Image 1: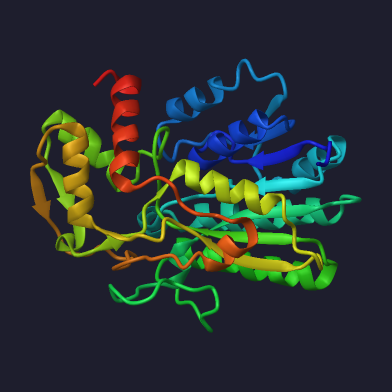
Image 2 (image 1 turned 90 degrees about the vertical axis):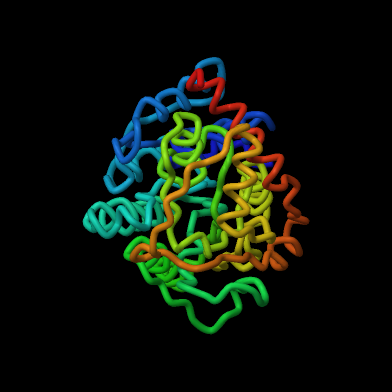
Length: 326
């Protein structure tokens, strides 16, 4: 195993926090980067960072990934040859309200990271987060989304920026030949999650006795993927760079889509309280259903999701009560 540190961007975020801890657990040195913005409650991000206080091999830098000079200097100064790039501006609905936040964080940020990597001698592998949103809207049922599809059809600016990052990585692979892997995440959930996600906001409202708004009249479905399963896939891919130093895109998901109303019922059981539901039409930028075909990821790493929704939402509800004192 390489002795150089691993750079994890978005280390104060949900997936970055969990990935950094997993790497530390196996003896890696980790350099974490995050701007810690206020897209959602910064105190949750600070609390995630506080969990690294007793990790001797973790160093944190509060920086903007779009600051190309700072990122390039950081990579060079620490001799970094592996990067897990998870920092991004998330959120389909937020992209409609604040489009320019996505230009800087997602487009300029991704380019900044790639430039730092391609100038680093002996660079091994860049693994970065894409999104199932790039597939656009699909009918419910049928086979899972496959990376082999001839085209994707983003229906939100967020999804378009993620697809653009994939295309940028493909161009850099062609130009410079360093190994890159994009991972299309499918609805990640679990303890320390993002408050803007439906399961998180539903939990807060159900526990407070407030009504929840159910969009798409509850007819949507999502391929929920527990955080530990996501990290299994990220680390497994990081250890297996493309042999020819090229670019690939892989799905990473639970491969077991669940209807929105079934998810709510599962959450109600985990909380022990029934939700007051207000049915709403589909929102702009949302998709009807997601379903990951993870056969290529399984062939590469042996990836197989372990945590079903009932168990995962139970873990989340327990964490939520403990963290918020609910």
